[in-house]
Length: 327
Ligand code: BTN
Image (cartoon, rainbow, N blue to C red; front, side, top):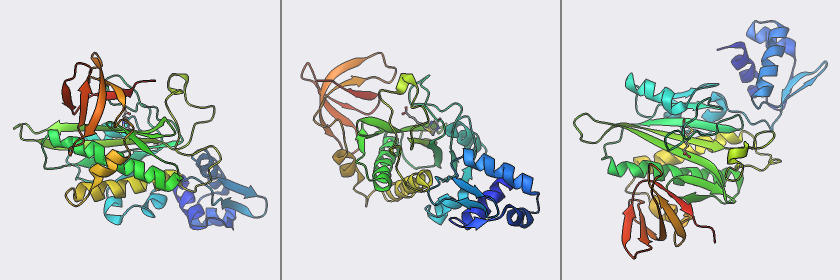
């Protein structure tokens, strides 16, 4: 562990209490200057540390900490076992894919507070991944066909919507197939990437990637996504360790559905939270070059969209994207 990680651990163990720089330094066997430097880095990462002369450092109860310690308080131990928290990655999906190729076990999780090349669902689409959010990927090795893999994404959308709502107290909805919305703004995106078995008999593995905008960045979201992107928490929300709680709860809930698909009635929960059911929409094909007007009639038992096209034909759609028609 680095000095920063060990300093964080001491501060977290003493959360709400002052501890002197000298005491931390002697516990870690480093200089007071090294502790001071570590505290400054931690402050940039969401730790609210008050420093008072002659008293030392105190980690505020209000800090939004994303650390292995804070995650382990929420995550069920069996899901925390293969958790890799990285301070910065290109894309958690990309890092996890490299680990999958080398034989990482099912349930391996890569998580980060920021990504330098976060990817969205469609080719060339980036996913905004700056500080303020939480970004993670889960390695899955399900014994299902490619068709059934839509369930992974939709189960994740239900887990994300429920967890966002539980932690923030704000209503969360799902726009087919996997975008989570709060107050008409997208707060969470999901990207599932599958590797197929060479014998064509289903999936070798799937990587489920989830990104949540927990807090709006200083200065707001960039111009190009300002109209559509939102944050789970309002600016003054006072929810300690919100990123850890949201991520941890999503993972626990996702596995509950994934491991017990028959006993879970998540499809009705998916429908209950749907933003598109009964609405006039555009159905957009995967490559984006086809856009059809339709009325959404239903979401079936496999979370496919059942819609009536303008010419009266009824279609069942399992890929692509939907955009709501403005009235
Ligand atoms: C979308 O809304 O188009 C899907 C966005 C998925 C973003 C997540 S963040 C974690 C994982 N790593 C990525 O590069 N993308 C997914």
